[in-house]
Amino acid sequence: MEIFKLVRDSFIDERGFLKMYFEKDWTHVSYSDSARNVLESNYYFDHVSYGHDVETAYLLLEASHALNLSDDTTTLKIAKKLVDHALTYGWDAKRGGFYDMGYYFPANEKPVVVSNTKVWWTQAEGLNSLLLMATIFPDEPKYYKNFLLQWNYINNYLIDHKYGEWYFEGTDNSPMKKNAPKATIWKVSYHNARALMNCIRMLDEYTAERITEKTN
Image (cartoon, helix red, strand yellow):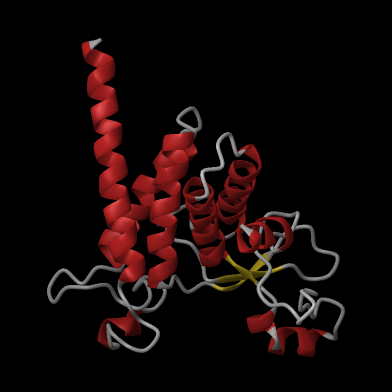
């Protein structure tokens, strides 16, 4: 419970994204007040990670359920905010796919995409969270619409239909990844495996619910 509340109540920026790194006293590591060259050389420690945002949305809701927190509207509100922020600022509305990194430059109200690669695990977590939001908020069609677009993106640019598995990054923006290793110390399959199994389950439940509605 302590870790759950720490992430939910302290790690989420009020603008709607997950803070990345912290000092021992949980002070957020930020270079936003530094010179531009220092700021840019430290993106890794201080950026908006759209993949971690959509994954954290799912994990917070999963943890809330595991902790048996009934009527946990606080966590649901935060999870929705994380997904909405990623859709607004880190989403390719034309092809689908979440970008890798954004950054809130000083005095900017909106983050700027500073890395437009579409890493495989981010797309898997995005697929899962978009469908999850669609099941929770059926009256907001953007979630299911973008879930379909996300699957189309994964099917076209990430899955290797000849040899199997997923490329490290989407081949629309990273065509060289077609020849990169599909298994490395940083490339494992639990993200896409979990996302696909969760989506199969949610779609089965969605279909069963619609059949029940029609027969009643």
